[in-house]
Length: 421
Image 1 (cartoon, rainbow, N blue to C red):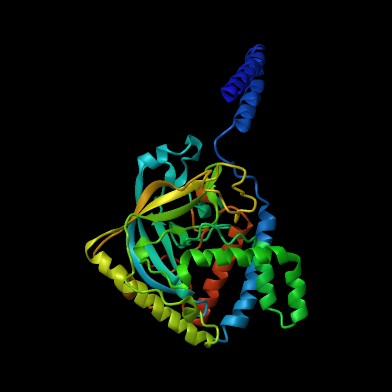
Image 2: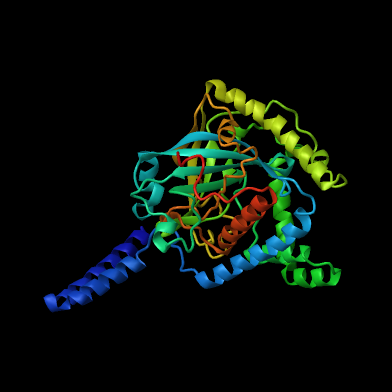
C-alpha cells in the first residue's frame, strides 16, 4: 500500500508539472514535450534498461582478443593438423521451424515486445547440432528473416554485423546459463599466456587477473559438474538436453538471455564413460580428438536419428529478462539469479521428423559443415549483443572460421548454403 501511495503521489506531481507547463497556452508546447520526455525517460519499468556502451573501446578489445586467439590457435592448433583441431565437430544439420506465440509475447512488458517477440509468427530455420570435446553438445539455430525486419547489417551498413544472407543466428550450448563468469580482458590474458615461451612472462600477464582466473576455474568446474554428473559422460540424448546462450542480448530497451527447454525425455541409451577416459591428457592431441569425436558420434547420432524417424523434437524457446540490478549488463557474463527472473517460454522450436542428420551436409558436399558459419552478431538490430565479451565473440568467431577455412582448403561463403535456396 505504501508503494502504491508513493506512486500515486509521484503521478500527481507529474500531472501538476504538465498542468503548469500548459498554462501559458500553445506557446509552451516545447515545455510540455520536455516534461513528457522526462517522465518517459524516468518512468519506472519492471526491467533493466540497457546502458550506452563504449563502442570504440569494445571494438578495440574485441580485436585484441581475436589477435591473441589467432596467435594461440597457430601455436597450439595448427601444428596438429586436421579439421578438428579446435576440438569441435558437426553431428548434423536439420530443418526446423521457430514459432513465437501470442501467449509468450503477452507475458512480456509492452516495451520489450520487439524483434522476434513483437508479434506471433513462424520462421523457417535450420539447426546445427555440434559437439565439443568430452561430449558437450551445442545447438545453433539459423532463422530466415523476413524483409520487414531490421538486421544489424541493415542498420549500420555491415560495420557491426556478420551476415551471409537475411538470417539471424542463436548460438547455445548444453547447460551454459553463464559464460563461465569471465570478462573479455581475462580471456585475452589467458590467450596471451599461451603465446609466450617464457614462464616469467606468462606469470606477468596472468598475475593482474589472478582472482578472476581462479573464479574462472571454479565456475568451469561447476559447469563441468552440471554436465558430467558422477564424473561420467552425459547420458541424455540431444533432444532431451537444455541449451542456453550464456550472454545477454538486447530486448528492445531491455536485455535478455535465451535458451531451449526440451519438451521430451530423451536418454541417449549409453552408459557414461568416465571423464578421465574421455579427456586423457596423456594421449596425443589428434588421437584424443579423434577418440572424442567417435565417442560423441556413437553416443548421440544413432539415438537422435531413431527419434526423428517417427517423432518431432520440440523445445520451448525461452528468455530470461533482466529485471534487477543484480542482472549485470555492463559485465554481461555475470550470473543472473533465476529467483528474480526465471526463463519464460515465448515460443517453440520444432525439428521435423523424417530427416537424416547429415542429409543437408551431403547435399552440399560439405562433410564437416565447414561452409556453415555462425556468429552471434548475425542477428536482428532489436537483439544486438550486449557487453565486451559478446564484442570479442564477434571477432574471435570470424577469425577462427577464416583460419579453419584456410587450413581445410574451404572458400569463404558469401551466402548460407542451406537457407539461400
